[in-house]
Length: 425
Ligand code: AMP
Ligand code: GLY
Image (tube, rainbow, N blue to C red; front, side):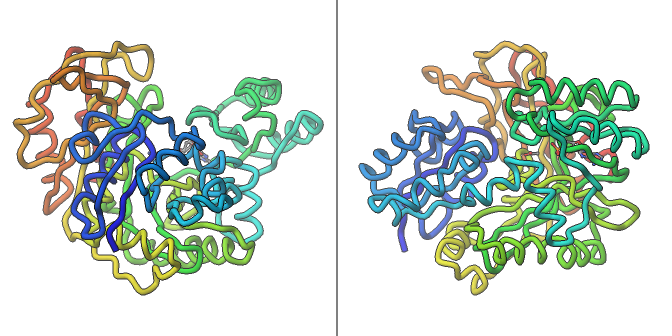
């Protein structure tokens, strides 16, 4: 089968998808909406927003697109899968991603917690609060030990989780959230027990019946070394993860992956895409911190380089519900990625800085995250700019390689963390 494929999104994750698909025996034309300077080297960027479904429909019909691979969560939560499935002109186009109902696993923390409790999936104790029962919320907070975890129910661009030490501050912020601190996203707030442990990300590809587990990754979200300072979209990642051994993975599969996929099937949720399990290891026991319904970024920039199987072949298996018959072949090396960001990020930063040195890199893969082509120059166009990924026989070898190469790249005011993987050494 030879296909024309459209990727939705514009970050390092989407560049990594494009890079992996480029070598697929099933690929004919590759389009990326809207893409970046990196994806432009592998396919054709098209200036359409991933949430403009009508424009996507016209483009797909005019260009004989056979498959859409959805990078970010917003189009999924807004129902891009359903939009294509329910229109007879375009229902032949395979959309890799869950239906709007399935996307609630990420789009509503309350839905996700309810799902986990229906299927006995280990996670933090919780209570969902609306303005009408704020008193129950205050009482629940008093029953917990600090710190207190407050989560906006809806999507809040990664900013909707507050972790607070003081009980009175927690009560005040609960009130603020319910009164519009994150807009409608915090009309409902999930209060959670705080879990202590080390986190990792497990990615599952499912056709709604069977599944494949991809390599485990760990990302580094804070801007500062030693995991300090503000949260970012992610400053680096490694895969696999040293503390995730066979015993832990067996628990993840039995206690979390299986009941999640079975739950999706039992609840008749249409789900043909990725499940991203944000896990925490609490004294050797895995618990779910969050579900996402897409791949992670920058985790994709280390996970996909380790997937040796033809990615489009796996996606064909997903759409035709024959994933079980496909084999997933994994590279036995390590992969690491280090993110180069604009000075000032995640606060204010300047864009349009000319980037030099990328072409000199031979033994790392430079994934573009926030770049644009300006005449013949690659310029910065976002906070996270480039993800430099390397392989190694050990995690340290992979990291060393990325650090050696990142030094060859420059743009004004660039910054990167020098300690990715520090806690796993
Ligand atoms: P989320 O947006 O759900 O990924 O939450 C953001 C971050 O907050 C997570 O990556 C965790 O580091 C932290 N977090 C969320 N929920 C909890 C919890 N129940 N206990 C401890 N940390 C948490
Ligand atoms: N790296 C975390 C995420 O993609 O949400």
